[in-house]
Image 1 (tube, helix red, strand yellow):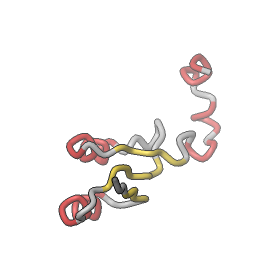
Image 2 (cartoon, helix red, strand yellow):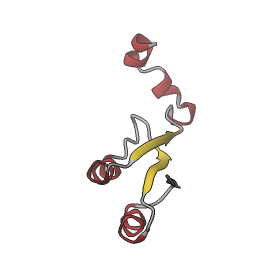
Image 3 (cartoon, helix red, strand yellow):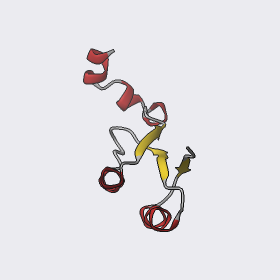
Image 4 (cartoon, one colour):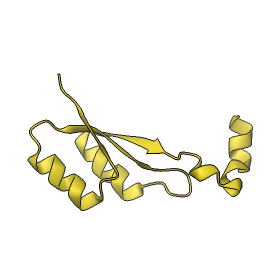
Length: 75
């Protein structure tokens, strides 16, 4: 089995890849975190069975994100 992953594809290029690639992408890596949730991309991925891999999931070490009370509780 072969698998392809994509990185930083805008929505329109992602759709083109899905429509034209012989081996369908399995994962897309993009910046995603609570302050940048990639909502539109997640909708597209949910229809295709592709997964999202977040880079900078803690928002580049954003102090406000790192100090969110919910994350402190979860930690």
